[in-house]
Amino acid sequence: MAERMTQYKWFWVWDFEKQERWLNGMAENGCVLAGVGWCRYTFEKCEPGEYTVRLEMCDRDENYISFMEETGAEYVGRFMRWHFFRKKSEYGQFDLFSDLDSRISHLRRIHQMLWMLGIINVGIGIVNLFMGVYSTGNAFVAAGNLLVATVLMYGVGRIKGKMEYLENERKLRE
Image (tube, rainbow, N blue to C red; front, top):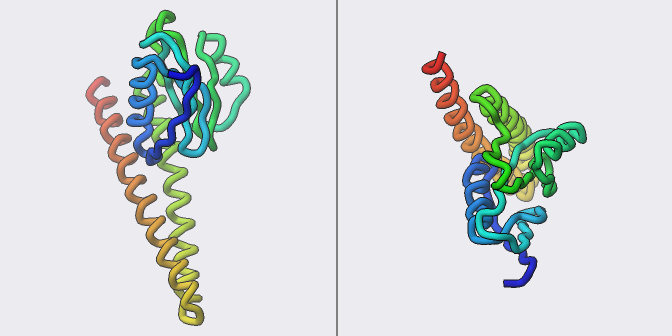
């Protein structure tokens, strides 16, 4: 294998845990994440299992990145609001979320973003639908917006289900 390689892979926002599992599987096989972009992941050679990779949706905050680096984590990069970190396994367990509340808070940020984008697409779709009376092109655009809204609302439901599961876990532990 070359020292660096790039792979292209698509993940839905609500499948961020699947994305993280894939990235850690790559690290287990000796390829650790070194860079990210739109559906693009750059890996560099490492010892198998040398690193653990984590990702989180949050606003860019230099203090948070500095804090993470003080714990031994390396900031790999970000794509949009998704931040990617890696940490050598020899430093012990690497988790970005220390308790159920922080996990729920993370899911809530994802939920709010998907909800907002879904509502915007519904609004644009309805406007274009009414404009479509005068133009066939607007009707096709409206259909596209409403399809996107449907997919986003599916994601809202998936994230909401994960939040409810964790909230029930929290109630059981209290």
